[in-house]
Length: 193
Image (cartoon, rainbow, N blue to C red; front, side, top):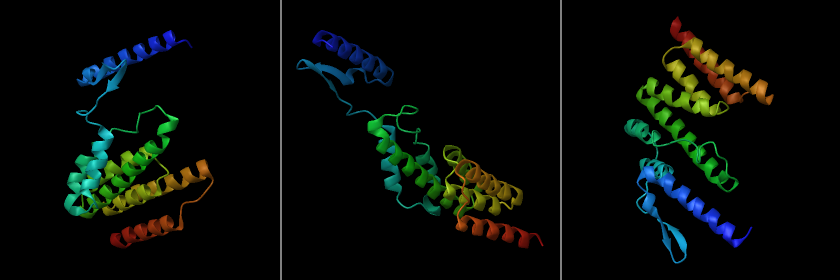
């Protein structure tokens, strides 16, 4: 590639970047300086940074801050870079996805503690769609079903998970999940008498 071609590509890229930033009111964030370009995003709001900052501010989730956790969960806009997978960003993408999953599980547990099974169920369903292999989320969904005395839903949740693990990975769920299922079903059966 010649220097002239490289300059053309750079100028085209800068033009596209400015065009992409314009709807966000950040067109002027890219400016020419000293025979080059500078990108200044001092005033930009970066969604994943806001999410991380707010989860850290909330700290450990409990019944007292469960409602606020719902607002913070809404800050998560999805995986870093959406459907685009950049090799250099894999570690950051996975770290952020793991942080989101841990936050949602903790928020759902806190919501269940307050008795808000509906909000907890919505969060857990969202997480389960993202990662149906997340056993901790499945366990919380099972607890939610037990809290609302939905034995059919509880059994379906557990059975679907067992089938998924068997079909996709050729494994069984953990002994802890089996014991939880037995305990929850037993508790529902005793309450029915």
